[in-house]
Length: 353
Image (cartoon, rainbow, N blue to C red; front, side, top):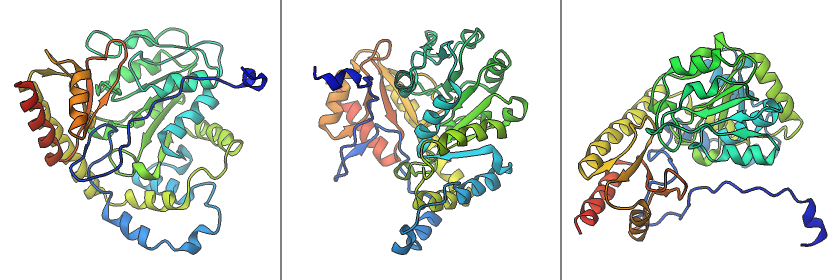
């Protein structure tokens, strides 16, 4: 080892889903992107951008997007924080709120970036196990801790935790910041945003990457009481004032305006998800009852690793996690009906061999 390497911070990095590019016949169901385009107004706003627009720095306060969020949700703008995807927002929250000597808590089967950030920022952590049906055990989060974060619906299992259980966790942790990561909540049930008025330690994080079809622009936001947001902004301005670029600010604000298109798209994905659940079940798959835009499925007799490779050879991409407890599961994003039909047709033929 060279001498300078002894001073390098070494972590096990997050492994993103494969991005194989786009080519005819490919079915990409591995990174939970929305299969439908963003709201029509987004394209119009994009066409109105000029090269001159990019000469100056973007607004560091992200006012256009923050104001659009405040109008959409009918809340004060002081309750919103925006960043470069929900990953950026959560990383900022880790640095801001998780500074206790006590370990932070998040599930053992969860978004794998949480452990990466904890290692990177030197935060002690503990991962209470989900139960045998992959459900979060709320009582595991009632003890002393340095903070709590969990996805709802969970990733990669897709299970949604009812707000009553979320509130019990909050009620038992008045001294810790609790972050609810709601990347997929639009496909599930009510958001924990409705609990924020009662809990000053609750931060809710959402993204435009899933239900709003803007994964390529990287837009995320947090919602909480103003004091939490002020603390987040203090860290942001000490790190990078210009976090969101101009197109993201303008197109993100535009995406919030077309509520009818948003509801229509979400409903289409949910309808396809429920149909695919029935068809996968008839093929011998079992899975938690997903409330997200994906299904976490295992077959009763065919190993997930084998299916993953067989699908990949046919240019059908799903996500495989070779990890304890879940190595026999595939996470399958809900695509268009046509894409899901291709997946199902292949599985029917392959499992009959």
